[in-house]
Image (cartoon, rainbow, N blue to C red; front, side):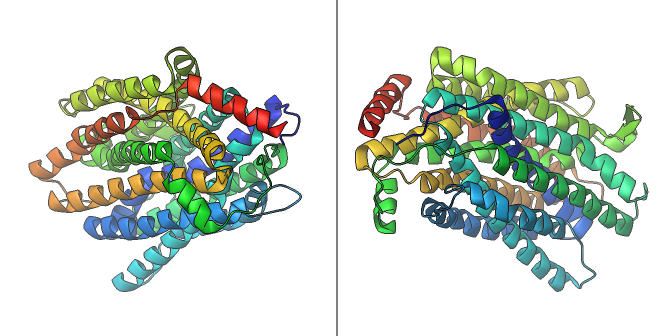
Length: 464
């Protein structure tokens, strides 16, 4: 049965704080980590690309393991909230070590990078999969879940905005504004430590301010084999998996190449420091932070648009506009800063619109599965959303690293015309491939608003 449902503003904010914490490091990984490994840590781009693919594919497969464990967790705090409490501190600690540069030989540094990054991704799964699954048990109402997803994504982008706006200034501060590589390495790890501390606090607040309410119709213990069988027979889940991977390829390629674009194509160093509120910023930091504001605009638009034309149509419209904007982006030259920033707003708004829709659709998939099988398996279904994120992220960043090597990229040097053309494509034509694929997948999604109302009514009748 479901407990009496009353979700306060404080609880909605509390749920949002969890993704603010996750997104602080997610954005560091997606936008800064490739650059960190090549220009600060000292690895070749193609080696980094291979490492990302190997570690993230394994980690993606680890997500369902966490989902299964969470589904079988029983505690006074519920199935999913205990993971927020116990994994928050390890999450912050290993996050700092990921951005630490040890005084080792090349082979030792490569091993260190593989080990720390692999552990970080596993710890990320251990806290983020239960956090995502929490959405499916806080409320039985599809509309309330949509509201919670909107809070989640709004706070996710607020966390990302703060991180991306302040990370470069913090690196400069902790490095003593010294461009020497050792000083930069110190600056990066100390800035990561500040982000880690904030993330730990936010996760703990998320644990304290949220509650689990929705229980399965029947309190039966299904086998792992049955859970997996039910998941594989869930056709809407397969469609969302494809759409999620494609969307993350689109996002990860754009994000991962942005620092290279501004450092080597736009030559942001020529513009000097841009001082706002007595804080010195660089163009790339403002570009990335502006993208997070645009993401929030997209999140805010997601609910009214989907209420009017449906989740599926809203998703397709947003990705269609992002496709057009990405193609136009290729034709901008390095001096057209206003055009670069303008299209960043348009494309990032579209990205912000689709992500709360995806999370809400995964909750619908859990209801669909429960109606057809009697088995809810919320954690396993939501772990697939995290899996799709990481698979898309793995493919996007691996391809970015490999193609940087293919185009002849050499860190901290002047780049050839071929390399610069490739860097331009990372923010334009390559992401457009991901958006087109996501449109193809989501066009097949069958769970309309009318169908979900029918499913919710049938499940509610069973729980009485």
